[in-house]
Image (cartoon, rainbow, N blue to C red):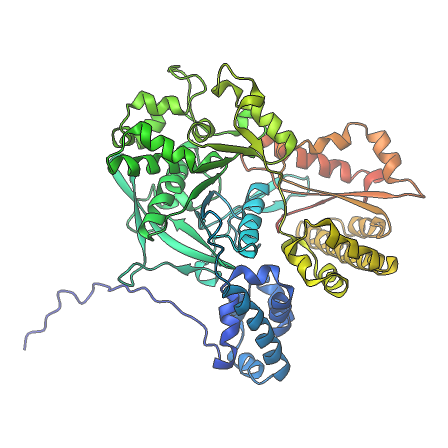
Length: 578
């Protein structure tokens, strides 16, 4: 008998997804966990916390991971817990009532593009204010019933985890995200297979996986190049937020802009307005022009249609903060696009130059965004003025104030950033319309009905929780670095819950001027050591791994905080997140 053995040693790999088995009675928990809606609804987060408070902490307040790690015996017990089931049904009813509302079709529909989104610390696809604004923008759009979808990246390593050495040196640690433990889902094509978008990079394609995050009623589509179809040089494109060299940055921005539009096309999504959150996504308008030209329009016709439906929000107040690319590098990946746009290579380069025709000038994404967008806005009144000056050279012959650069002042998503204790107070004293109309001054008049003692009690409850967190964080960091135990005890004793506590939580870039407080240390010492009116300053934030000056600021603050007169008065907390 002859046995065929030709393939006996060839492995046959298959993708397997392992999920925990949830009792049928608790299936609603799984549905809620898969929508970031829980992040701004405290009844939902408290429900997940109460399932297993210790495990909730260990899981980083990630409900998907919580349900996965919970033992089957524990889940079975919860499935018989009448109180838990009642609370689950109440939260689920609120969730479904919210989700079943249809978008307002009277308002323009929007496609939004951003390099980062700060939705929850569970999903590490953000680094600072730009991402937090983008996350709040999606949540507010959901609450306001706006027809909006968004595009970004699913980073394998996200932004870095910050640790500090004993001498105050920032150390960047990158930890891989396990996509199977996140509130995300793969997007499937019409055949039920995982959708893969092919993005042209001159003479080859980059293949991007597509994921969806449900942000309330809003769909956020995230691209991920960690695909075996890609080369070893392209798989890492989406590994790190703002990671790698300038070539990788350009690859990222091509993927976000051109790949973002191709993703929406693959999903059959068309919107009225296309919104770039910073210049990173400016290349959406290259692909949009290509699409119009492919229908028979001229370039001039296409760019007018694109301009009329494009909005660009600028965040950076200094020219050095914008992305510029050398012509050689830009042409390496974008050389095939001018012919599809119906223009020459020089024409494309000039759209990204302050001075068209200047061969020595690099291509600027922000200039390109200004030239292809009808609306441009800064993020405050003052920043709008700064941006008019910053971009004035684009429109020569006009005064800065005559340009179409305006401003929309940054806001915050109130339910996300209000502590549970304050929310309970609002529910008690304010009318139910408060959550949907916080900009109405009349609604805020209800604050006069709240007893002063209750406001102060709530404030002190929150402050004491913060002080407890500061002490725990300091103790853990000090022990991890094997610091002198007597010094940490001394520091703990000096943190005063009754002192005025002033916080500074920002990215540590030099233009944010965190160092101004330390220009007169003698005066600062008198302020923080005033026996009648003591003051404490709390600093927290990350510097970009390649920003030596920003890291130097952190080190300087930590050095000052360890001087005897500032011990426990100047505090720096590591690993700032949401």
